[in-house]
Every structure is written in C-alpha cells, then in structure tokens.
Amino acid sequence: MPYDDIYLQADEDMGKGLEHLRQALRTVRSARATPALIENVKVDYYGTATPLQQLAAIAAPSANLLVIRPYDPSALGNIERAILQADLGFTPNNDGKVIRIVVPALSDERRKKLIAHIKELAENAKRAIRAARHEALKIGEKEKKDGIIPEDDFFRLKDDVQELTKDYEAKADELIEKKTAEIMQE
Image (tube, rainbow, N blue to C red):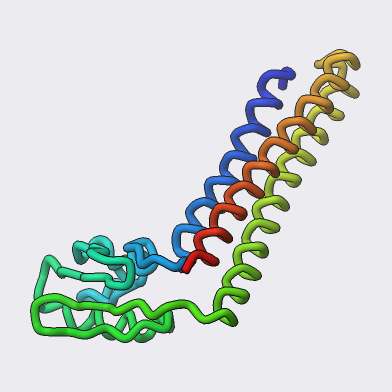
C-alpha cells in the first residue's frame, strides 16, 4: 500500500470518527428545542422498531416546543408511548391529531451532566481518531519493512498522519466548545 493510500485511509477513518461525534451531538439537548432530540426515537410501528422521523413530520415552532405530525394518525399512541419510554424527560401531549412536547428549561445540574456527557463523546471520538493514526502507522511500518515504501516516505507519513490527527482532534474540540456554548445559553 503506497504512502498516498495509507494517508487517505487514515484521513477517511478519522473523518468517520468526527462525523460520528457530529451525529451524536445533534441528539444532545441544548437550550433550544430541535427535532434532532427525538427524531431517532424508535417507535413500535406494526411490530417494527421504526425511527420517529420516518413516521412523522417533526417541527420546532418555538425555542421550547416540538410538534409531531404523524403521517398515519393511528400511530399517535405508539409515538407517544415511545417518547415516554425513551426517558428523555419530556411529557408528550396528544390532542388526537398532533403531539406537542413542551421542552422545559435546563437546570444548572442538568447542564453540567450534559456537558460531562458531551466531553465523554468527544473523548470517544478522539480515541477513534488516534486508533486510525495507530493503524496507519502500523501499516506504514509494515510497508517500510517489506520495502514497499522508502524510509524517507515512512517518516514523512508519520509526520503527516500526526498533523492530520492534531487537525481532527482540534475539530472535535471545536465541536465540543460550540455545543457547550449552546447548552450554557439561557
């Protein structure tokens, strides 16, 4: 595997770790209500666990309100039950046509817990980024021993992959800072 392939594979793997962090952060509550908070709640729909976003239109008409309009009105009860079972701290109000969820303001204690949770998510993403670095260097070392890439290219690969790792970790830190600011916003 030549230098470029090893580097590109490391870049792709690190990108996947960062994208996973982005997706995880979307589901973490901030001061504002967003459809992402509930869109992946699994609803029992005719015996199949189906993500809520496939069963209903979800809107956030104000900063503390979510409105769910099911495509199939007969699913209202199942959607309401799934939201309660998801234990998100929300109480859905079903009026027979739509479900409204008033998203309460975050307490200081809850904010601290959420920040601790997102820091844990970031650390997991950084572990994935470092694992991609380790794998790239392991492949590079093997290729150097086998004489496929010259020693100079291996050392250049080491430096470049380390720089790539720093960039991705900085991007993860940036995402966490942004989400922390959202959570602390009143």
